[in-house]
Length: 307
Image (cartoon, rainbow, N blue to C red):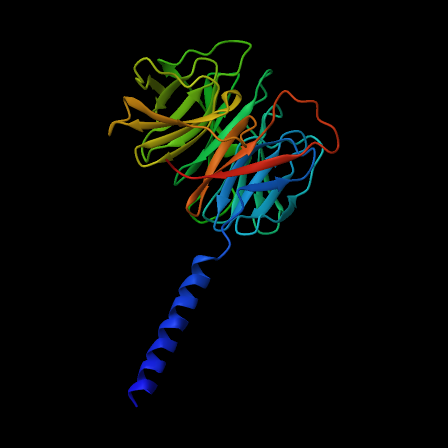
């Protein structure tokens, strides 16, 4: 009987070890996710187990499963459209900054259906570069003009009309420089907006009620070539695209000052532009600016860990 009990206990322990080992060997998400050749991506967003990536020249949006890396084009290319920065809201809608079109676009994140199109500005030049979502609105940067654009997000889940689009003129510390890219990535603290000025490397808070900007004091540091932003609590991630790095900044509780804690580099970075959080990882899209694009030019999204 004693031997039988020992055998039973040993068998149970062996089974438990096999189960544990099996779980520990489950496949990790891929470190690189391939996009369609010649896709020319810029913006990236996430929802649940999916990432969404926009195509600059075509307006297409690609959706990929982060667990497998596989995906397909969700929003088809359309003439006269572009996709720069983008976000996905809690109702499953993709909200896209339209670059030089001066427009914003809204799509269904499940089907790719076209839900809305907004003319944000008729200014020339313009470049609607990025978007952030607050509980009641989508806010867009214009890299060529000292303004932000606001499109309401009605609480009943409906799509706002063109007549609700408004423009917020910026004042205070931010100074727009003609002929270059100025405000780019944008984030939301819960009360204030934060935007990065690519050409100077300065960060600013923006009061969404008044448009008053205040420069965030980083001491001697800047984030030149700052592109996409990701804010998690008091930690701000700033993609510095052509420098192939992501600055990690610890912000003060009032967002008036910040300290660059570290800069993330990765051998797979190839001019990353924007990033998003999905699962336990961060994902940055490689825009590969400056190369000659041919039909078989490859593009990727890079997965990496928080520092």
